Structures are given as C-alpha cells and as structure tokens.
Length: 209
Image 1 (cartoon, rainbow, N blue to C red):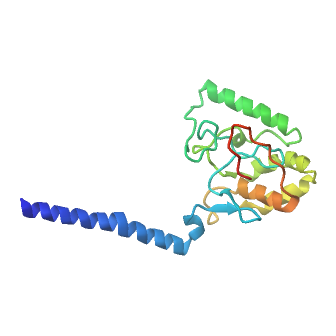
Image 2: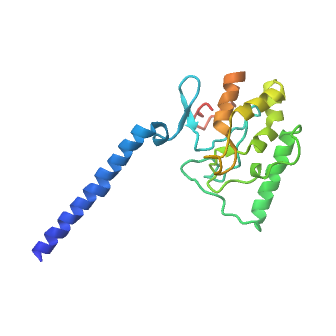
Image 3: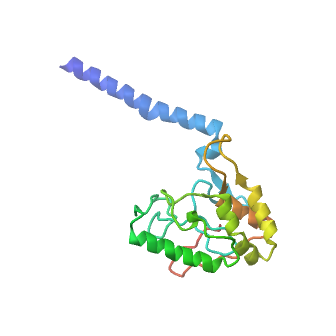
C-alpha cells in the first residue's frame, strides 16, 4: 500500500510540474518571442504612446465625431470587458425588438445624412458584446455624421475608412472589416483629437479614447 501511494504521489508531482509549470512557461515564452504584441493583449496606443485600449475589445464612443461600434450587452452599461456576453434574448423577445427600435430611432436622428437603411449590425449586439469591428458598409454609413462633426469633407472621412478596411483573413476567411478603435485614432491623427464630455462628478475619470 505504501509503495503504491508513493508511486501515485510521484506521478502527481511530475504531472503538476510538467502541465502546471513547465508547459505554461514554455508556451508563454514562445508567445512573447514570436508574437509579443498579441501575447500582451493586442494593446493600442495613441500618438503619445499611451495605451487607449485593445484592438480585440470594443469600447463606447458617444461623441458624434467618432465612429461608433455595435451596441453592447456586456455588463450593466455595456462594453464591460470583464462581463463579456450577449443579452440572450431571442427573435421573439419584445424587449429585444423594443431595444432595436429605440436604437434605430436614435441612429436615424443622429445620422440624418446617412445613405439608405441603417445596417442591422448597428442596432444589434454581438454574441460577446465586445466586437471591435464593423463592416465597411456600417462604418461608411456613419461617415456623414463624422464629417459634419469634424468640419471636413465626407470624401476625406470615407478615404480614411477605405485605408483602414481589412480584407478577409488569408483571403477567404470571414468578411472585410474595420477596427473601430484604430479607425478613430486615425481620425485623431489626421484631423485632431476631439474634446470628450466631462465625466460625472461621482464617476472615476474616463481614459482618453
């Protein structure tokens, strides 16, 4: 019995060292060596080198001069990276329909010069609630509002969108997309940063976007 117990303990210790220590350290080291940016969270910095977010996680942009991402149901107020998730509301849900109708009404009011109907992705949250990308069509639909708020020609805004549109991964996986955070940073670099609304007195200061 003692011999069997010692063998089991040795096997347990060896397994823990290999799978709980050696393997994670080796994979972490390789990740840092081969693709350090992705391994450290795909962080995005502004022109001053300050981290303003991750290209993998959506964040809210409410100022008219910035492109806005998809709605979010992650966390109590949305865009909470610690509470990734959808609303779990189905197509027969009245709450879902009412929410989409309210979002549609606001988008139409805020974008009077937008061409055609509102893209569906702008009134529906993604499964994670943190989708950082938009289709080029959904970004271009907002170009008129962004141009008006920044006081520049709409063609110049559309050119920035075109410049930051990514194609399908490996040429055939997924769809063309635009990363909203990187797109908004490009606007700031080219046309200047816009003033953000002052946070409420009871709320902690917001990080610059």
